[in-house]
Image 1: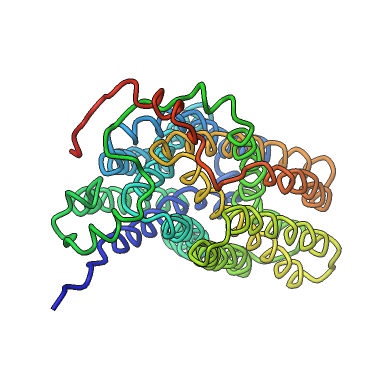
Image 2: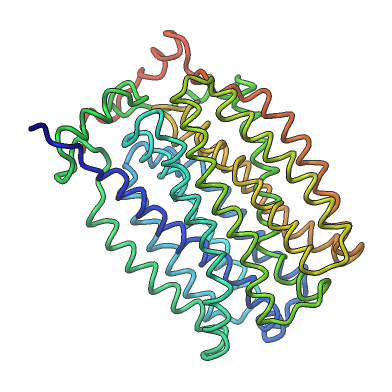
Length: 436
């Protein structure tokens, strides 16, 4: 009797879900305790927004180097290093009192967390078939958006019993433990994982979208000449600009503009993240289903992404116009939820376009995304301070509409290296012929 394939790849994908939960709890906890932290340290809205912006700046600047390092050293080492680094600086956030040192700590925290997604893109390329990549991408993304679902509840609980500094200490310790577990269970390729049986290995390899396991330099000259490369990056600038607004300012907005108490705000602020968690998971399933059914990736990825952006525009208009605080939360949940389709299609398309160089392509895309995340807390804080929250929310529909147009140019059906000449240039310099 023939053995059934093992499911080790999905077990590791689930562990990426856990990593995503930890990462985004670490990233979002500061927004939940914004008010007591601002009061204690004497920070105004613009200064507090600078903390989030410096995190995103550090995160953005490391994206391309992180993608290159993930391709060279493998996702196992990079994720372990990243988790330890950012967990240490999470804990330091609770110790530092000086504004200047706090800015440095949050910048270095961003650098530490930066390799997570490019390393995941390399992992997904190495471990999954081409009709599984959207679901594989959705694992880390789902964890990332489940983190803010539970972060308000956990953070408020820790704050009420132990103070705001304890939030950062406890989260940092948990991250270091997770790093140790990941290093023990993970490997860079299914071919070298002892728990992967021959049936699972054959199943993956028969439809995997990498040419071979030789590690080579990414052809950046070719990439930078492609309008699809630029379209993928710029649309993600808009997507993370919007998501970062929700991450940084939604709790404060609900307290100040919609009159929620701290305890009720914790629950209300978690609902939009629950919505995007659902759409990221369902979007990954739907996108891969369409690929398996023979639909083009222009339909399976781009059309789904555009649909999410259009739903956002309609929902944001309704959120701004409603006078009911609870209807406002409902429409904002639909806003953020709709972006889940765009996010998961962005990461699936990065691996479609990059293939062997998915670390580099995803790093480029996430560089642009986190430049948007850098700008968002500062600009939204300034607009809210000077023009009010309704204007801050309402103007977001303009860049979102532009992002929808950019998706027409991504065209994920063919890789960025779709000619023999390009491939020959890509393999010009071998850096490692070993799977290790």
